[in-house]
Length: 284
Image (cartoon, rainbow, N blue to C red; front, side):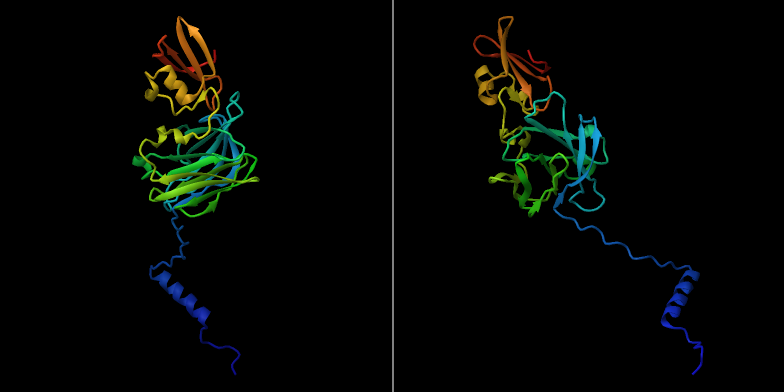
């Protein structure tokens, strides 16, 4: 039996073929990694908190990939902490990771011990980034052990960040009822909504299920309340934080949830007609 076999083995033959292909000008590409499969629901993952001052003082705490497949922008959630704001208020801003945080949308709520403060909105700018997705965000109080999203897009537990915030992004194609479930030590609290969101969703009072006395939300005061009577304002927002007489007019002051020393002042005639309305006012 010869000590050396001149016939090339399989490994040698493969190497010769590869060299021959390269010599002839043909490249051999390595296998490409599998593309991320698009899912109708993307869950935000906690990241190391990063301090920011825009859109307000707070920390960036969550990042979620787009639910519409690769190449689409990721989303961030920022927990805001305005100095001097009422401790019962909680605010979260959501925006695209590749754009200025100044374009992020801010949402505020009043804390409750048994349920997470949750926000549901159609976020994004369709003409720049395709159809706008539905962004679900919020903050869970200490009494809530877990927050789950259930319904039309499946069931997922939403991880909580350093300040107990959560984030989920649903594709524009999702249809049906979706629920935000807060699992607490003493029970379960559920908030539900139906996709697609109805017209004028941002103006619906159901977006703010919990209120505090003498306060309004920044997104519910505008042209829709101008020329309302005193009785209508009190029926909608509750009793004001303060009242006083100015130049013979009855003026009611409401704080704005999530802000410090900022509010709305409505002044009325003796018969209850609204005479003026002004925002960005300091408490009397």
